[in-house]
Length: 245
Length: 88
Image (cartoon, rainbow over all chains, first blue to last red):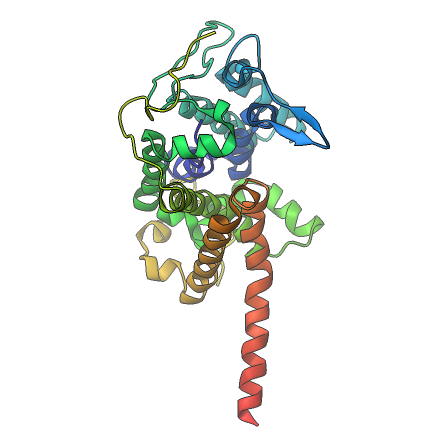
């Protein structure tokens, strides 16, 4: 799985899609595939009750499990639901669908891959660029991801935004393109009395979070923990090769 | 002055022509860079110290929103108080 690409790719998409889409829809779509699965995948201890999947990879990406949530069809179902909830807002429909699909496609780059074409094809599409390592827990996954080609994935998307789409982060772009496309911003202003400076901060917050998170984890993994780099295809070497279920 | 009108039909996804031609300095003020830059530095340091308790999707975006909500008015108040004192 990707650690920052899902937050960052929306800013490249909103600039280069060539159509009006809701940024908030893109964000919702990009976050939705892992909404039900992230906690059991890494495991959580809540008042002595441990909630953790026996086989995190299968639970997250396979069948039986919640692998179907990382598919284009699931994105379509969620987008249709959002379309109806937003009183047939096309910008929200396309935003949710594209954000969701982009998440599923990005995750297909690791060794576990995603059930991209479910229900027409139940196998996983996996490029195998870096090792899926969620079974190592969240910290172990961070070490493996930021020592492997996964790190290049996140920094690559960050560079794409900074080089080819940096203007989307400006106040002017937000006010003239992002905001008029989506009535939700007016709703935030009227109902929650959120001023436009804070609306802009909401818009920029996931970019700042994603970008800063990359460098903070790099500092922890390599500066504090002294982890080795392994930029070989499918690395890092210390993660067990992925066994399909 | 902020432009809030609808986007032209000719270029709905790229925005008005002037946005796509403006330089970095024209689109981002020094003040804005200062507020956001300070937020990035503080969040980075907190992230390295507190790790996953801070570097998660709940706290992360919220940190930046709260920072931009609180710090600029606070900074302006401090600055005006300071200049009032020095005027006396």
